[in-house]
Image (cartoon, rainbow, N blue to C red):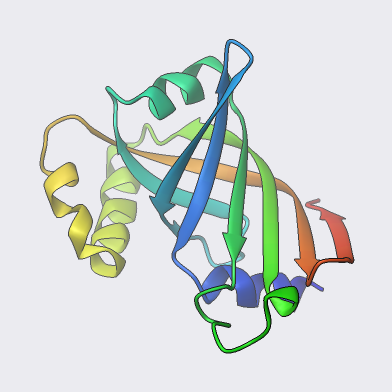
Length: 145
């Protein structure tokens, strides 16, 4: 199953990030890169956004990655959806943040304006579990050790 998860994660570069503050969910479409194990997801946002305030208030998050774009020719019932439950963490070491930012901009050059704004923050989501939905009824779950 782990190879299937990696295939979904590496076959995409957009996810929906779900955060919660004061009991209210908030979803954001995000560009991402991951570490080699696909267990840590890195993203970029402005510190002034609702999503970032939510992340600072509540570190529990969920990501949704799906194959609808890659599998456009397949029937809708065959699309895969991967839900990642994880924890937000800020990237505080300058060298590490700069290295991740370089990777993000290489994969997502459209983020350059945000990166150069002076208000950008690189952050991580560390996966705690994955749920892979294969079509509409085949679901598998795995916790990250």
